[in-house]
Image 1: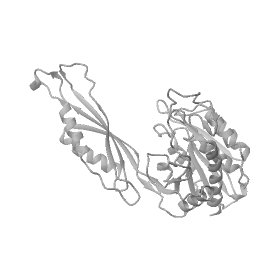
Image 2: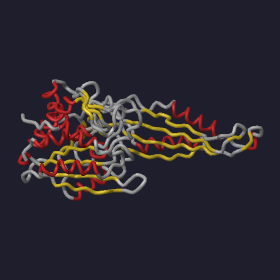
Image 3: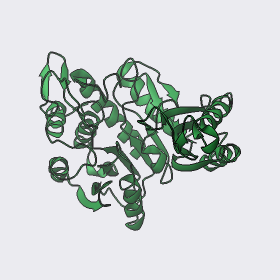
Length: 377
């Protein structure tokens, strides 16, 4: 099976186009230049406004014969800020021995480069191939994949199956495939009181004890024991703040933040309603943002196709999992069946993020097998 060997060069070019979220411009220019020679029609558009935008999005499609199946690769070109302490420039792709370093090498410019190389070796007569690529996955994800889905529906180009190239592997390339994700909701709590002198507490209303009591009650909740395909849901206190610089003043306000990751026993709104009901007893206000409901693509033809491609190239039978954080698969699942598979995630978001060069070549071959099988039906 002949496969293009320039996956490292393509990954390097993408890494060297800085694209801290929300991403626009140069990195999409680089990506479009890779796709155009392969016969793809590329549509790029901006969505949103500051501070969460503008975000650039790209949908590229190469039409197969009439009536052929449609397989989509999905992912993101934005990256998290690099931070300090890199051994070399975070946006200077550098190969040292068997590793390629740079921000986005793993999450997920390396995988996108492998997708392009996999498609390069596929003839157009095999079927319709598309790329669903956003510049806002690492950020609020408000103006990224959601507008892309709207565009895809408007042009009548809904895929039969979508593969998201997130770094799902844990210890070795091919050991894990994601077939679903838990839901996610953030909750902000504000307990208001009345400011006063600590020596005259009867003239004030201290909100801190009420907020602490509320957090204790919430922390004691056991949401569930897990479900058939999901780990137990968990509620975590992620911030607690008063911001009182004075030692002799009872503050007028205390704030906290929660993050709830939940399985298919719950919906986000039901959890928010439960927190709101408890908070009302403690005279505390609630504001919430839902980031995505729990979902699963149950084991079947899609997961079997992915697992077969992985096993053929690595010898591993991947674990089908729903662990980890959120991804844009939570949106794409409304479009078509979706599964996630990609590189090992040990260095994603870390200083000196790096990918094994051999893994890029193997991933290219895996993606080629997946696309061939998906288009063959």
